[in-house]
Amino acid sequence: EIEPINNALQKVLNLIGVSFKWKSNQSKSIGVIAQEVEKVVPEIVSLSPFGYRTVSYDSIIPLLIEAIKDQQNQINELKDKLNEKY
Image 1 (tube, rainbow, N blue to C red):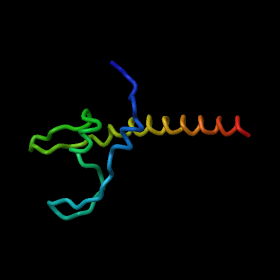
Image 2: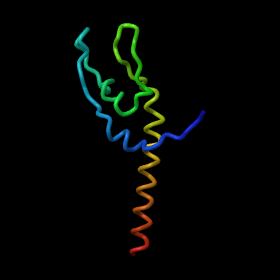
Image 3: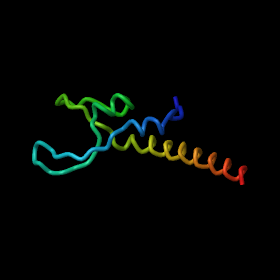
Image 4: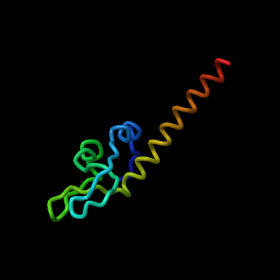
């Protein structure tokens, strides 16, 4: 079953990128909070054997591709409206 990703731009807008330090070694990193992602795109969050929620970052890429295409469509519509006006 192959289906397009609907409302990709809105999903991306609902994600929050964060910077953080790992508890284990205090190293800095950036990412997203799995519990927050789960509210928006639950299919890319899973539970590790240790009971932690993890995000499949690779699975965010198709979402971003579709969000960019949604934005480009909006830009093209605005350009067309401007061209009609002038």
